[in-house]
Each structure stands twice: as structure tokens, then as C-alpha cells.
Image (cartoon, one colour):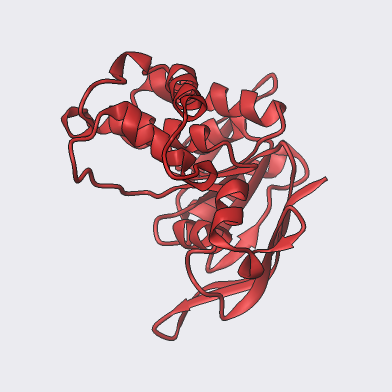
Length: 251
């Protein structure tokens, strides 16, 4: 079953093409990664899929619905989006920050169920002990985990993450990637911008590479990965195969 369908998507900034003729489908319950060099349009593509910018060309279908024709409340139930940057403003307790993820499902004020969902999301991410801490007092990595918990509390069908591993130590990177795998196995569709191709190839099951504004796909066999990735990233790379794992290293 298709969760996301992108057809002939294009986007430009001040007349300069950023994305051109992007088309792909994302299956329900898959973990799709978006990779490429800095400035290749990864974040822009995710924002287009989230419906945050107008499209000069192309369509985005989410769960069979044209996103441009979908209202804000309905969109919140379909999509959860984590931007690349978010700045704390008020020193709200972490629990209150997470429960705002329930806004699309709340009538007037959050219910006990909403707070329960928020607490379960905090526990899933591994930061339940931070529930009463002011958000502004947290480290960058802790804030990142709070924002991910906020999306989990939202309980959307599709989760869009722009560099979710930013500011996280190795332990939390692995924990989050495993959590995303579990969510995908349970039917939630994950689309994430990642920088490390080794982690992306280890945890994701579909990979979209961007170069020169266009989408590219891995070769059919891993023998061609080194040349392909070297071209995508514009630097010599080598690939080591360790069983089912693919490890990308500088040449």
C-alpha cells in the first residue's frame, strides 16, 4: 500500500531550480532515507512533501489524498514533521511541549489521554525522566529527543524528519534509529534526511539520493555502490560489505 506518492515535483528559489522532475512512491510502513551533499535540496524536498511550501509543479499525495486539498487538522493527523532547526522560546516543562503535538486531536484543552500519550512518547524516546524539566534548560541533544517525542505523541501516519540525528551522541543515534525501525514495522511510514550513508543503508529500506536537483537510486547490486556514492558525494569513497551491512568509508 502506498503512503506517499510524489509526481513530477519541482521547486525553485528566485528563479534558480532546486528540485527538478522528482517522482517516487513510499510504501506504508517503510523507512525511507533522503541523502546527498549539502545544498542538494534534501530539506527542501522534505518541506515540499510536508506541504510547507507552494509547488510550482508536481503533486504530493498522502494516503491517497492530494496534500494541497487537505485541511490543517487533517494534515496534522496524516503528517508529523521535524524541521532541521528549532529554537526554544518559553521555559515550558518538557511534558507540556510534548503534549502540544496532540493539538490536531485536542478539543479546547488536553485530556488525561493526551497527557498519557505524551508520557508514553517520552518513555519511547528514553527521556521520561525529563518530563518536568524546563525545555530551555536542556542540551541540544535532549531538545532534539523532546521534539521527536512530540511527533510520536501526535501519532501521525507518516513521520518526516529533517536530520533527526543532529546533536545526538552515538548511543542515542542508535536508539532512535532502532525506534524508527520498530515504528515502521508497526505501520508508521518514516521519511528521514540523513547525512551518514552507512547508518542510512543499515537502518533504512529505501533510499533517495539527490544530485543536481534530481533523484537518483542505488545500483541493483552492491558492487556498484562505491562508484555511485563517489559520484553522488563528489569525493572518492569505498564500500565494505559485512554480511547484510554496507559500510561507506573515505577511499
